[in-house]
Image (cartoon, rainbow, N blue to C red):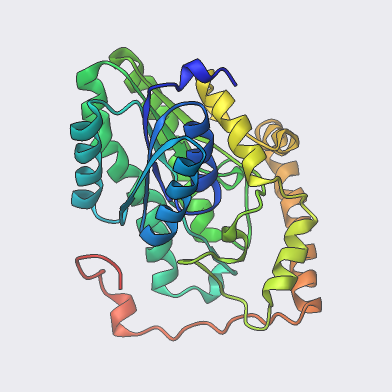
Length: 305
């Protein structure tokens, strides 16, 4: 990667404590950027920032819950006040809830929507006007291949990632006249903690062990997260609109576009194999939660508990 693209730039990475966020932060710092790692797991984010500084990079960790617009705005304003600009915003924080939708509870929708979609929207709300004012900047939203194709067994995640792809495509067109760039990352399977639920997500399949879950993901050849970050950073530097790695996943995206019916049959076949693997590994379908007055009514205001 041409380090001059990122040298001296300022980047905020949400979800920077682990996974893709931590790898992106390290890659940006190696290329000469000042990186702000923003995460609910601030102690873990500080460990990543410390390792970056120990290697000669520039990094700072801050606590951030992307479900709060005031909190996101405060992080953006603080970075601009300290460094004078904001060149990159990586809207990367995300969680997943694995399991079939017939067993979802309200919180399975709410938790994922609040982080994966509201968190991205709040990042844009906070940073985009400042980038417009300075006439430059690059917003990079992390979606997923689940934002381009069907991903049965991950309904709430798939819904949010489709939304993030659509949002990013629309914003890219709007932002061009302001000198602001927009890209969306659509990783395939990457070796990160989200594969087993991560800190704030979960797999709603009783009896399915972490080892069995990882064994199933292994069939899809997970890419090393540092390799992904390196390739993604190169693609962002080129201002690519939709960034897909590993590249072989592009074949599934192409199939979805040229023959949605054939794509649906493929994913149905994959889903049936996945269910068989889950049962063979001892996983049991989660019982549907009873409908209560609380789940029937509108959501209460404020952050999810």
